[in-house]
Length: 170
Image (cartoon, one colour):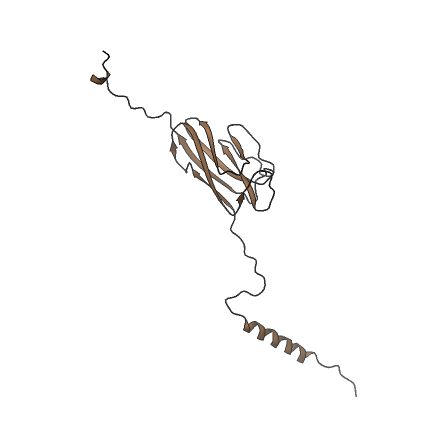
């Protein structure tokens, strides 16, 4: 008579039963194992001027807020950080290279601030783009960018009193 090898079935059945029993002890509301939560993408929002604003001529203060990224000084290459750049009436051309500097239209805010004042913005329609870049000025990927359009009026309203008694030269 031939000798048969013992069947692995009883051991396999015990293993499956044990695994099922362990799983049933877990709270159904708790995830099993390590769960990697995907974070929301980083955002930048130009809060001032707002989309469609009409502003007076003169200095223009731009203010931004961010979520999902920390604003730090230029040169800091820590993951999850960056600093602001502003494009006033300029296009964002190549997002794979450092942001260029163009006085009056492309501004590097490497001091970790979230506010910048353009000293003089001329009358008319304008486009403002804010983009967050890494420590060496390359835009973050995915892009962290916002755009607003605004209008600078031609002149400040001046109230001129009509010629009358108060304006008579004596």
